[in-house]
Amino acid sequence: MTGRIIAWGLVALLLVVLGGAALVVGGSYLEHRDLVRQEKAAYPPPGSIVRVDADDGAEVRLHVYAAGRGDPTLVFLAGLGTSAPVFDFRPLYDRLSEDYRISVVERAGYGWSEIARSPRDIDTVLGQTRAALAGAGEAPPYVLLPHSMAGLEAVRWAQEHPNEVAAIIGLDPLVPGYIEQAGETAELSPLITALARTGLMRSGPDVFETNFPAMVEERLGEEEAAAARALFMRRTNTPPMWAELRRLDRNAAIVRAEGVPDVPVHAFVSTRQSPAWIDAVAAYAEAAGGQLRRIEAGHYLHVERPDAVAEAIRAIIEARGDG
Image 1 (cartoon, one colour):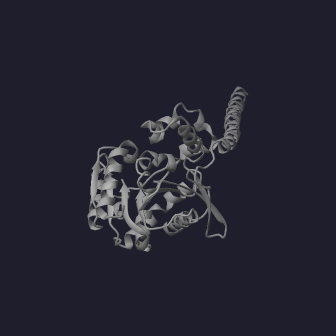
Image 2 (tube, rainbow, N blue to C red; image 1 turned 90 degrees about the vertical axis):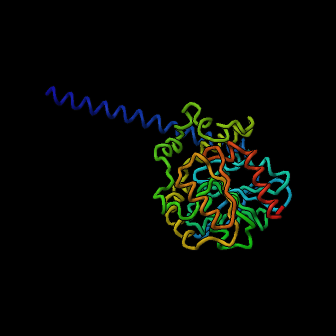
Image 3 (cartoon, rainbow, N blue to C red; image 1 turned 135 degrees about the vertical axis):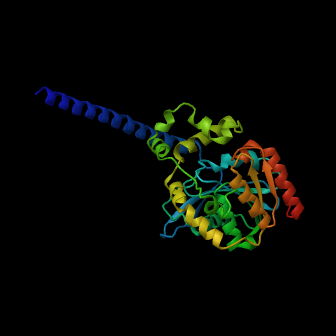
């Protein structure tokens, strides 16, 4: 009899614990959704919201931020999981927009762009990027500045539409062949995803300040930081980001199979990367007739060393006669 009482007591305790956890998570989620609504009203998109076609016949609303004048137009493409590309790239494009037209395209599920369910194969992603730029009134030829995973999209762009791409200048880019050679791929955290979607991430101390590179390097003003934080809280590990991760190996194989494009591929590479990454980027830049520059910085080298990177970008463009 005593054993049964103990057993029922343990069951009751477990139910109380689970019920309490459910209340905490549920309350956090409801508060999170309310805060998201407030933040959307407080921090509207600074650029253009462009409707582009999706494969299922629906439309996807993508955000394109543009500024500055001059030729050529520099197009910034974010790496996997970058919650707020407009603010991630700001330290770099602020140093270039006086001389060139700059444009940041936020893919579905990034920044102010809609969380869409359209496929994340490389050609769909590229098609949406090109359509968003055209819808925002931008026109080629472009100099593409892809960070990390977006290196594949930039190379695919040059393969499929070389007349639109004057050059690629990668920011520690993923290059075709690296995944196959190194056997490495990107990762996203299921735990972080759960914390973000339930709003529990908001209660962590300094989560945004210590995990968003432009904040770590103190590159944002107070108003910019507030807007970037709002995006960070609702655009961390979104479903499109997970879909991109699941497609990464196949997308990389597609781009690799098409060979080196007839467009120069320059690159900045982080000296803190693995030797395999550095060697892969160096070999690809050489094969594509481009220049390689090693930067003493981490993977977000455009945030850590924006002055050095901007100066080198100008030198590459001026040497080509594109500016």
